[in-house]
Image (cartoon, rainbow, N blue to C red):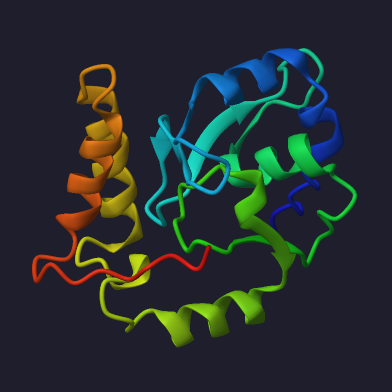
Length: 171
């Protein structure tokens, strides 16, 4: 039998200056407060950003989901209990905009996915899947000439919907 994994020390990670600096350096903020803020670092097979956070000497070093760490940094760690998950209102797995996150549970997240995955042009209906979409956007931003990021993001998003259909955002 393996030992249970210790709880992630979100409060300590969110207060660790080097971790916050590494996190912030990997976020591309789109224009305006309602646009997605894209993750530019490692991306998991579920499309979520990943980051090594904490400190080895302090015993807090671990790889975490970027949006959960971001939630702890921007909204506080108190809501991050064992059964809570950070959901994306925008359905973009790599989004780091604190205004796009809400706390929920796994069932709510599954019901959201089932309700929206078939909507024409919606992020969850992207032919590449969440990881392929996140990687395409990240790579487009990193390759874009300064000042052309918005066009690069739009092209990367559109590539996942070859019919040209798109879903208008809710805000």
